Length: 460
Image (tube, rainbow, N blue to C red):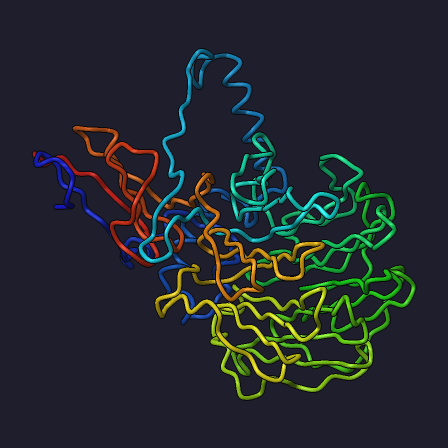
């Protein structure tokens, strides 16, 4: 029995998704993409959970219709208008977590994938959650407010800030069921954008490098195949793109055309970083299961590369998921690699040190997804990861938690005490099993990756 819950009920916490449940298949789908997986994958519980989830939603097809979610939202609104869903006078109240609390990491929100300063007003900061939409801060990250409520999708992959424009939903020319790995605006040309996209295709990932010349209203495919990253030089004349599908490519006409360059060998996931203060310095980092995580440096504007940090183990065994490389815009000697932790070099990539130590007493959550640097202060920066957002004023030596006002926790399942509904337990993505006894602030009951929680009356 879980401590803090009533004596008349039991709360059963399931950490493991039972294999006998996960293997059960209730539907037959011709040419089912999940049947194409190899046998070792089919034995994994995570795979079978995904299969169970998606098969119900694509049956009788062997794919999810592109507009399925749009239709579902439209149907919801129609039901609301007929009061078949709930009465119009029902008032919903946020019960959190705002925020959750996860042992040594302190306040947590959820997996945050991207963050950006407003280049014109750095007190304004935007972040994008894996599934929680875009949030905005007016006070440098101390407090946050949501900016998206009724979008078709609240899943965020990349942010780029154009201080002269407003929110619009653009899809023209973009593939369906795609995700943005990176979105960049050409310096001094706010209507010109480049985007590195991936796209789920059966059990694999495809995608492409796309460009827009009208502020994102319409897009054109530049190079077909998975694209992981794209960056501009500070002048905007040169652009670099990389991905296992498109290879390594360089543009010298502001991103209009790209030429393949054989200076780098592609791995499963690949990233790039240009040193804004020394644009001849370009870094690349690659990951695959065979090589782990390697870093390379160019001093001739990306024409040739040499491996650096050769003595460093970046703990990149899951860099297919949590991975980036960035250079401090004011100092090319400060290079940052994100994997499970953040690794920092202060000597231009020769050596790297772990500056977060998330599994060794550090206060920054593990599984790093992105960084952002203050546009005018060389020492200030943000990092985002599976636990939320942290801020540093000394180039990452120490960090301050900035999750207190975010309501973003990704729950897999929740359960309430049948005697007291305010007593809740929920399994979350990489933030343990969170619990509340009625407060808007939740705390961790268990660590790790939470999953199913079930409340069972004692009489059963």
